[in-house]
Length: 91
Image (cartoon, rainbow, N blue to C red):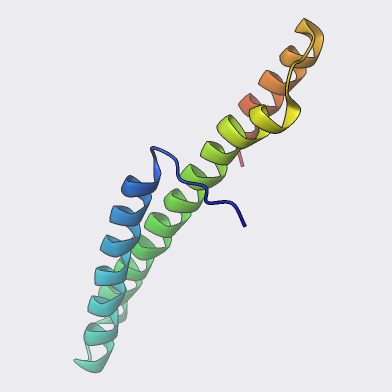
């Protein structure tokens, strides 16, 4: 298996580590009997952090790996690839 490291990976790792810390806080909040609203807000923050990490990873993959896999392209093919990249940002 080939190693795939991109410029965004350190930022993704930082975001996931932060999410891990928030998740541990959520566990502690539940154990401490904190109000459900507070817990739900923290869970939402964890979910958003993970979602953003995933989005960054997928977008990075599309931007770099797809381009490499496609190789040389005609202008029309490149336009289709760019359109795919643009629409994928809405996922």
